Length: 297
Image 1 (cartoon, rainbow, N blue to C red):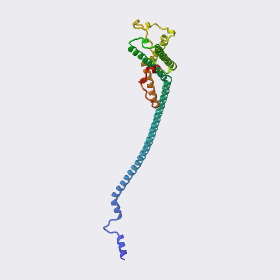
Image 2 (cartoon, rainbow, N blue to C red; image 1 turned 90 degrees about the horizontal axis):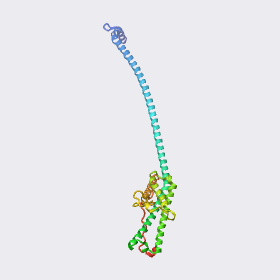
Image 3 (cartoon, rainbow, N blue to C red; image 1 turned 90 degrees about the vertical axis):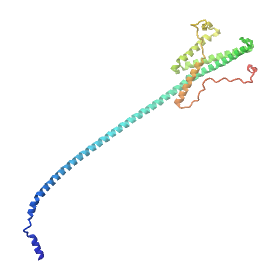
Image 4 (tube, helix red, strand yellow; image 1 turned 180 degrees about the horizontal axis):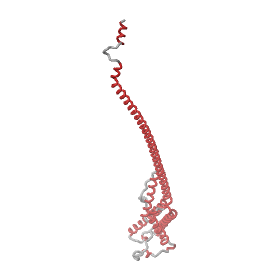
């Protein structure tokens, strides 16, 4: 019974308690603005999210496009750099090949110059100069004897046989000098195409002296031009120059030119060449115990 009474008491309205619709009427001014606010906020949030999503998609597409463009640009730049490096390496390779080919051609040319002209020609000049020095030493020895005997007439201090031997020796040396100069001229004739342009003036002067010597001084039966034609005192303005086929300065010049080409060839081929000995070697001196009888023999 207590329970039923309690239920009835709860279900029956209390005079002081307001009905439920009064509660609704009282809460409508609060609930409806809240609902409208929620709808508006939700709508704006939905629109903002859609716009944000759209912008995000646009930005993602833009970033993807930029990444694609950047990748393509980098790829093109890499390809261009690779092509440029390849071209540079090709130019470098061609330059090295041309340099090596040029060095090889220069090396072969120098070898041909040394073999066909400068080597044999310098040797012939050195032989001529050596023979001229030997002849000069013999002449100096005779001059010293003449001073000791106080006479310029060799017949006063040389016997007939000694005089004949001396003259024959001088003549042999003269013939040997002429032979070596003729050989040098022949080397020039055969190897003229290998001559350097800057050597033309000196070499043509040597050829001129050789030809003049054969024509004016080495004539048959001693028929030569009069000595007065070479005399400065007789012809101070138009005297002929005596042809000199053995010029030490010319032999030295050609020797230095040969050594220069040898050094250049050594630098091109990378081979070590022996250092040349500049200047002629001194002639061997006779032993101190060698007497006059040994010389005559």
